[in-house]
Length: 497
Ligand SMILES: *[C@@H]1O[C@H](CO)[C@@H](O)[C@H](O)[C@H]1NC(C)=O
Ligand SMILES: *[C@@H]1O[C@H](CO)[C@@H](O)[C@H](O)[C@H]1NC(C)=O
Ligand SMILES: *[C@@H]1O[C@H](CO)[C@@H](O)[C@H](O)[C@H]1NC(C)=O
Ligand SMILES: *[C@@H]1O[C@H](CO)[C@@H](O)[C@H](O)[C@H]1NC(C)=O
Ligand SMILES: *[C@@H]1O[C@H](CO)[C@@H](O)[C@H](O)[C@H]1NC(C)=O
Ligand SMILES: *[C@@H]1O[C@H](CO)[C@@H](O)[C@H](O)[C@H]1NC(C)=O
Ligand SMILES: *[C@@H]1O[C@H](CO)[C@@H](O)[C@H](O)[C@H]1NC(C)=O
Ligand SMILES: *[C@@H]1O[C@H](CO)[C@@H](O)[C@H](O)[C@H]1NC(C)=O
Ligand SMILES: *[C@@H]1O[C@H](CO)[C@@H](O)[C@H](O)[C@H]1NC(C)=O
Picture 1 (spheres, helix red, strand yellow):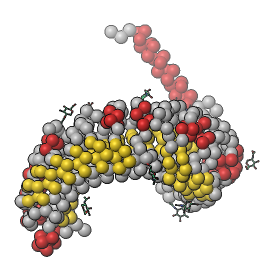
Picture 2 (tube, protein in one colour; picture 1 turned 135 degrees about the vertical axis):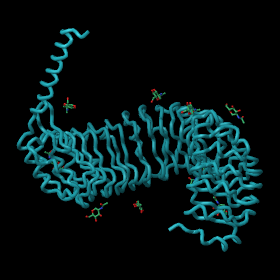
Picture 3 (tube, protein in one colour; picture 1 turned 180 degrees about the vertical axis):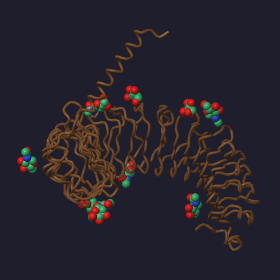
Picture 4 (cartoon, rainbow, N blue to C red; picture 1 turned 90 degrees about the vertical axis):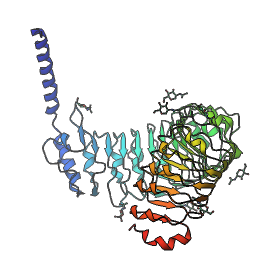
């Protein structure tokens, strides 16, 4: 039974809700600000009609506009990915209370960032990413002393070293200048003590990394990848980086010069050091108990894989070690949580290991792995998408258990010494798209069951003892590389446009 009291309370609540809701609706935008927005719109070319709602009286409900609940002033203008072109009018200066300005992902035709933005002193977040601004950053932006986030990424901005580093943005927490065309020495960042995220990747900064970067004690993300930085990186570059979670120094010419017994101040989630010169396996990595991605590709490591590497915490999901000279055997990985493992082009030897149970990508190409691969049948590998065992010394028959890997789309067994017939169960991999088996000693015919692989687009069995296989007609769009003597017979199967 519902008592009258309950009904009364419900009624009261409803009433309160109405009062609050209508309270919201009463917020009227301020006429001067409405006019400023309309004048801003007039300067723009809005081919996608993204701003079509910008005509009604209530400007606080216009697309991308947000007003303060208490004062009615426009506090947010967010027109990212609106297809806008044209001119950014200085009428925006009338928006004296604007905190967030986001004009990312539009096309302003290669103009300079308007200097007047530097007069919007109250701005806390300025996002002008991917908007086709070029030239230099106007020095007036240095007046934005309340700025907390600045994202100018993916523009063709350029200059000797961006002026911005001469500014004092005491409160800046996020600075994203990635993928511009900045050149010159990497700047000193001590003027930005509040930085949490720093992304300077994809520019052409040169010289060495200033040691002062180690003083940015609030830093969580440091991405300097894809520049022309060089010189030594030492412990002092990290001295106060207690909060760092992501470190990306890849694709520069940096040499990591760190003592083996170093005990880092941080617990990282992501380490990307591809293309750095490490010499040997960095021992400090074993102190990182929360690591999710470890990328040491092409890092000049000439060393045996340390035992601890294979006992990394269960947080480790991606391990990239390709293009080094890492030796040793690979142990049983079946109980690790690795989803992607890339050991290609090293000097690993011994048998192929039992794979990580949940792996989707396994790349072991270009090592000295030997023996048979029948062990891959022992367990189901339901999540495996990509298996590359090419360019090793593997031999024996390829086991007939591919129904255990139903999600495989690329299988590369090329350039080994496999023999025997190509297994029938390959036809059970319904998603199989690329099958490379060239450079082995396979014999017999290509199994008819491959007809069931509806997605198969590429088969390469050249360099085996496999004769022509007529059944190809069934597969309607693929490239086929058969032994040379067969190609003459089947050239008409190149039916892809
Ligand atoms: C204004 O009020 C709405 C509804 O209560 C709320 O969702 C929104 O976050 C508030 N905006 C600001 C800037 O406080
Ligand atoms: C940037 O603007 C220039 C000049 O209008 C134009 O030629 C170029 O295509 C634009 N670039 C992009 C990526 O939109
Ligand atoms: C803004 O910055 C410019 C260039 O740095 C400077 O000349 C000007 O005095 C600054 N204006 C204010 C109000 O601080
Ligand atoms: C980067 O800067 C260096 C030195 O100024 C120059 O030699 C090099 O060509 C630049 N690279 C790119 C990709 O702009
Ligand atoms: C690779 O590391 C060795 C030391 O292990 C060093 O002598 C060599 O110069 C490094 N190569 C490059 C390209 O940095
Ligand atoms: C590891 O990460 C988890 C969740 O992100 C966090 O709660 C934990 O404190 C981290 N551990 C260390 C040692 O940083
Ligand atoms: C690999 O480890 C798993 C789990 O620890 C175990 O069940 C399996 O027998 C091992 N395989 C080999 C070949 O040692
Ligand atoms: C593999 O995935 C299953 C299902 O997501 C999960 O329960 C299991 O813990 C994972 N095993 C390992 C070793 O990560
Ligand atoms: C197999 O070896 C040949 C000759 O060395 C090479 O051209 C080809 O790219 C290799 N195949 C694969 C899949 O790596």
